[in-house]
Image: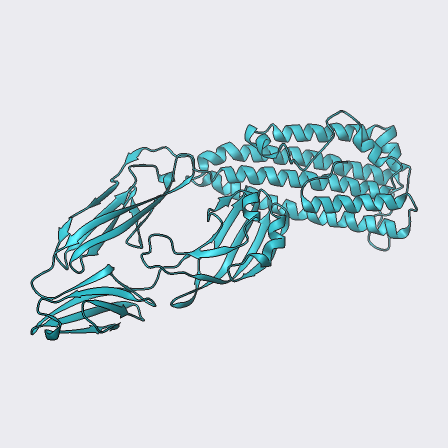
Length: 505
């Protein structure tokens, strides 16, 4: 009996082997009770996996009617249905073997053929019968038949699609010797009925796991993006290169060729902009004189479904009028909680110039100043030079939320890559102009999918993943990890940010 690679299944199999070894000494009441306990655990696990499979199939039904996923769902839903049918057939066969074993061990029934339960509400048959399993599995050749069905099931599941074979051939949950030996018959020979039934439950558990992994894989393929670039948009453009303070500049950014599946996300000047027909538009009011640079970041998916990021810059020059001028070194926005550097120009000299501010505070000095703001809204700086007053208005914004990331920060990563991570982070990204750092304070983590028959909860504190290292070690292809209730500490205090989901393959 080959040991599977999945840790939980290894544990169940090892428990079974230990109990089998005890049988060589004595079929005691304690040993029988131990087998009954393992069998109940396997049945509970089977029910949990079936519930997970039911959820996956409900999702697949929804994807069939969603125009965005219908085309791929029509390909992969039938493959998932095929996996379910193969698994149901084998599971039913194993269930009938269990019934035959109980009947062969004297299962009590009334005159109408109904099973009679004992005082504990359990089926009443000879649990320690050493002959029933040998008679059924050896003499009647059911062991050989089971071996054949397990081998046929494995091949049929792997043959559903070449991609499924490539993904699971080396670690398929149902493992049978390939040399034609009658493996299961020797496993059942002179085995008490309760142990034989537990072994059949273990095979059912392997089948349920196999179905879950294949169906989850088929489900995930529907979300893999297949692109067909069929439209053309502007790559990067601006309405003017030279403006005066207060003039408006329109910046247009997009990808040269795109499909709706490319899902472009465009950030200009640190702000996300809506995308229409593959391009986004951003308008900025020119601030102080001098040269200015606006960063433009475009995220999209290429034809292979890989996430790409392109960063470019738009440059423009603001002329300085004859009077006073205020020039923001980092766009025309003040951010809460940080030092905002500004440069103030005066045509008359600083002995005849006064500077005041509303909506915030500005440091004293000459041309180089620092602005601090504390509340959302607007602010203005007034410069009075030789009796001539000029007022400049600016927006006040909150520092944008950072993104929670582990490792590469991608939503789908290889299981081995995720399991090797030790730290998480809160990343503002290159598009934000200030050199700021956020630290993770805490988060709740949910583990589900492969290797987690029940949703399992963990917590992390700070940027370390040590608090969930044991759960991370259990993860494998098909596992899903969701970080929620994420709190981070930045220069403006503690805040909650969006949750992050990671799927392993």
